Each structure stands twice: as C-alpha cells, then as structure tokens.
Length: 537
Image (cartoon, rainbow, N blue to C red; front, side, top):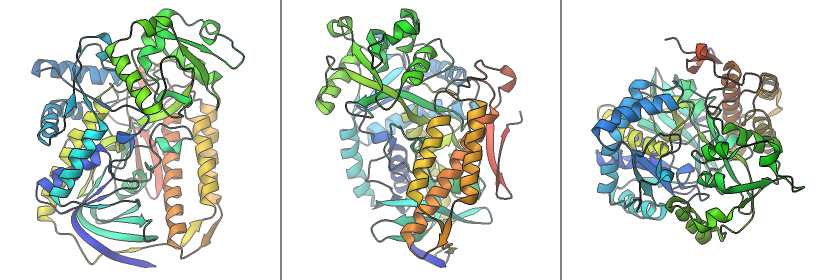
C-alpha cells in the first residue's frame, strides 16, 4: 500500500538528545524550516539519561594543546580513528562551546581542576573541563526551540528513509499518537537518533534510543565503521538499577560475591590494578585494569557484585567524587555508607555511520551527528568527547543541511510503498535478540560465541513467522525489529572479523592486540547483502 507525504519541510532532524537539539537549532538559525522528531519526550536519549549527574565536556586547553589532543585521541582509539576527522573535530570544539554559552547555557567548572580526578577518562593530562547540567540545558533550549519556531513531534520512531537516485526525499515514521505510519518529505534529513546499546538487555541509556536508524541509512548508500567497539560500564544492579558507578573510587572498594568471598583477593587484583581502574569508566582491554572487569563479568548475574567503600574514601573525598555523591544523595537517596551491587552494562557506541567533516554521510541531503556516527572515536574514547561530538557535528549537520535545503526544494508529491507483510510476535523476538546480544557480545567475546549468535540471528531473519496485516502499529513494530535484527547481525560480523583484542573489543580466544589488523572494519550493503571488511589503506 502507498502512503503519501503528509508534511513537508526543509530539514527533518531525527533524535532529541544534545546532538539532535543542537542540529535543529543551528538549521533553524540558518533560516531553514525544521521538524524535530523524537521517539520519547523532548530532551531524551543518552544525553539526558537519568542514571548520571550530567554531561562532562572537554576541549584542548589552548591552540598548542590541540595537536596533543588529536594525537591522544588517535592513540587511545588504537589507530581506529579517521585522523582528518579528528583534526576537524578538535579544532571545532572551542567554537561549539562558544555557541553553547552564547545560547545562555551555564557551564559548570571545577573549583580545583588540577586534581587527578579531573584528568579525562583514558587521557594523560588535564584539559579544559566543563560540566553541562541537564536542568539548565533543558530550560535554555526549550526557550530557544520556541523562539526559532521549530516544530516538535514526540512519540514517533523512524522506520525507513525515502531516497531516489542517491538523494534523500523524506522520512518514514510511526506516530504513536495517531497509530499510523506517515511520510514526511524534506530537502535534508539529519540522523541524530543515538547509538545501538539498547540492543542489549542491560544498558545505561534510555529505552527510547531505538537503534533502528543505522540500517535505513545503510540501505540509502551510507557505510558503518567501527561497529565492534562499544563502551561497557559498571553500573548499579541494586539499588537504583542502571545508576552509573563512579569509577574514580575503584581504588576504595571491597567486592564480594553472595557467599561473602573476597573477589579482589580471589582474583589476585593488586592495589596498582585498582588504581589504574580508577582512571577510566568503560572497560578496555588495553590496560592491566581489564582484570577488574573480567572478574565482574565472570561473577556477575542479575544480582550483581556486592560493593562497599572504605573509610579512606569517606574521610578524604576528592571534589569529583564529592560532586558525584552529592548528586547520588539528592537524586537516588543513597550515600557512601550504602552497600551497592554492580554489574556491567552496555553504555555507548564508539562506531556508527561514517561521516565526513561536514557531517555528510554519502547520499545527497543526508547528514548525521552524535552517537549514531563513527570515525571521530576509535576502539576507546576519551571521556568528555561524546558531548563534544554531539555539539560539534550537531552544529555542522544543522548548518550544512540548512545550506543544502536553500538550493534543493522538498518534493511534496513523493510517496512510499509500505509492505503489509510483517513479523509475528515482535515482543518475543525482541527478548530473544537482547538475550543473544547480551550473552555473546558484551565484555567477553569469542569466535565460537559470535558464530553461534550470527547463525541464530540469520535464522530468525530468514524464518521468523510472518503474516499480512493492515495494522500500522504491527507493521511499524516489525520494521523496527527487522532493523534491530540486521544491525545486531552486522555488529556481530564486525566483532567476529576482528580476531584480536583492541580497546573496548575483547576476544578471549585472541586476548592480545594484533598490529597486522590495524585497519578499520567497514560495513556496506550490496545487492541487499551486508558485507563486513577491513578498510583498504
């Protein structure tokens, strides 16, 4: 059945996290008519995840520090970055911060920024550090969105992208309010829909990050890069499930299993290892501290690893830790004296849609920004650069999309052919998918597990029962599930192809880094088939 365009505008932005809101505001500032689409409420996604106190934002200290930051990003990324993109990224951060401040956002600064705790995660030195407080960002941008006349449509999910002859024509979305799949035409489309961590059962991002925009982008001619690299973080299993654990205090913890066994002593983890683990939040195979995460992964279940804090921390707390525990008490009603249970959660995607320095991703009129993109981060990511990514490339995407729309009018006469053939019992298959990804593609990966997962997903994609329906709710759920299944499949194929351990990707059957594999893995689509292959250099 055919659906025709119900709305038309210059620029459509998909996603209302920091990157999407930045892109929408910038496009509107440049004179474009903008529609902002959000699966959840405005100000959602990983940017506004309630399990953490706010967003850290770093930049080079000065012009002389820019080259060092570029070199550090490439080194920490284990040579999996696009070096030209990194250079453009770093040089654009100060301008993005100035734009943010010009909007009226108040940045939080540290009283004693030279404390070691303010060295960004994985970094080797202090940078310029700022904090974005969610309440302030919400207030400022709520007012700015109204002032710029941006149309907001919430409770809607992208199900496909309409393109013709290498040019974007519109967005196909499911709207919960009217329970219909609709087509909106546009001159330019910006994807800011977030990463892929909701494919996993345990994740510390909001559930409205649907992880279903990557595959429609692939089908329009985009490529994906670095999909095997995902940040995995310790977080609370109880109480307040999903609250981010403050990694800076790892050197002050005792950890036991349900029988009371001292896990740190049992695993022979030294104070030196715990000190290193206190310098970074996500898991990495690149440091000796990986022993801590592997211990948690082996002992973890739905109840988590029992964790308490030492008197040393309670009696002498750094400013960074104090800020965290003040937030924890205010928002979660927990203190440093409470016992918690922690486990490992999927946190953030380091890979995604391959973009250039203009945030363009291939097809005419298609742009991307934020966590859905890849190239500016590698196998590991320095803390505070995810926020910077959303700002920098959100501004670039918004500005370039608006510029494109000035010379390319939206086609209001377009239509989209909607298949009425859909997967049965999508909720059941969503649970199966989450189980497959969580069991086989979290911290501990192996060729055998990954091959089994690939086979299971291929079988589901090919053989899952389907039926005909005209119910748009059923059809949309099937389209979303199909995209999530296919996205999971390409992630697994990338992880299977990388037969080494590098940064956030760990293979227990290949536990060391292999320099002969120092090339990025690119995912592309040809003849309706997805290929994962190493990039030619």
